[in-house]
Image 1 (cartoon, rainbow, N blue to C red):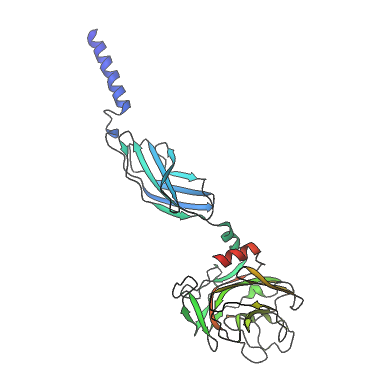
Image 2: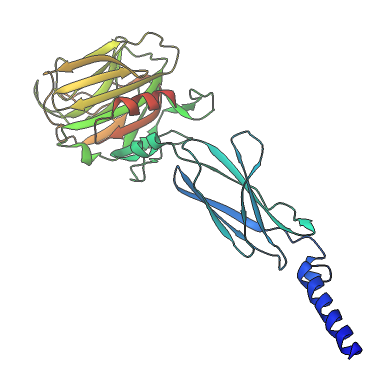
Amino acid sequence: MRNVIILITTALLFCSCLKSGLINPENRTPPLPPESLSLKSSTPNQVDLTWKDLSPNELGFKIERKKNNESFVLIQTTVPDVQSYQDKTTTAGNTYTYRIIAFNKKGNSLPSNEATIKTEDPAVALLRIGLLAYYPFAGNAIDSSGNNLNGSVFAATLTADRFNRSNNAYNFNGISSYIQLPLLQALNSLSTASFSFWVRNITSNQGAIIGHWGNSNGGVGVNAGFVVGHSSGSITASNYSGCCAPTSSRISSNSSWNHVVVVYESSRVNFYINGILSNSVSGKLNTIIGSATSSFIGRRNTDFNRFGDYFGGQIDDVRIYRKALSLQEIIYLSKN
């Protein structure tokens, strides 16, 4: 009987030690580190994390995060065997870096790989709506809107942009250089559109910056498309051939990069220079954009049997919209 009691006591002690991890081989060493951490964010307020669990003996995972240039902090501890987590405490326009650490009673694993993501500013999402074409000029004239309206460069040369990044803007000589775009057919017959770009070092007295225009329109007042240009220090816009183009106030510093937005709504055109309304003109334009036959950056097509004016100066970040940009969107573009 005594031997039976001893055997039962020994068995109970063994089970207790097994549960406590004292003789459980799975808890004699720290767990293996997780790997292949990846991130995805569908909204500014949520980041989805996934990773691979390589350890058989973790008691859970520690999820650590740092925001922008801050230090890592623990944001969540999980149960074992999970391989995903949703962080719903992020905010828009910030950069977040994550790492995962497995743990058990013997300690922590090494951290997983670090993964970084930047949550989208809501203004960026708004600026994708209605975007017809976008030319960031990152070494070429590729359209980054997703609409595949890629440009072909003729005699324009790459130069530094407003962030002093080389080969990220184009210089136009005012004589023969331009970028040929596919016909922006979607602009024809619109009553609302917006044109955004950066300019500096304008050398021509006048010239077309964005020329969506027809051939030999044949008379004053004919609606041949839409042109945004430059004349004697001011920005101009018109879809009224041969006369009376509305203008902005003069650009004050030609040697600096200036952000320009032209918003066309029916017969009204608003000019914004560096996020500030420069001028608003009504009644001098046709109420829709006419049926242009070609689209350019740096010139416009034939008008009264002559080539349109070539632009001299530097242009960057051209955006063309099938909507009227809001003041909030215009200010955002002028600061980013």
